[in-house]
Image (cartoon, rainbow, N blue to C red):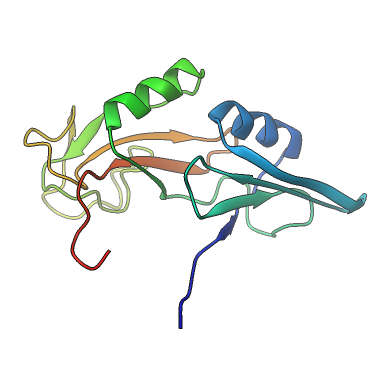
Length: 157
């Protein structure tokens, strides 16, 4: 049986502000509907992605900004970071984890959840290892996104 992750619900405090942000980010608007004053669903899809996001009124009881570690996979981290910056997105500089893998807690520079020996280093991974270079940004509510450069997939993907 195939199980495909296709939609993630994001908690936001202002639907129109979030809609403007994800439009500016370059995501495709798929749907904006609200059958009642208490419910509104806005649906966006990142370019090239099989997974979308939804947000709006009456969509979730989660606190706005509480979703972290949303990964956008890119083939060239420096080009992707530059494109987001050109779109006016406040995106971090490119970084890598000294251990070679991004662990929980790096999304917004949070040091409280890092494992021993983890250290965020400036720039792309020195050897250009796939899965090892990142940049991060947040939406206006603080939902945390990570760009991850993948140039070659692990076997089985």
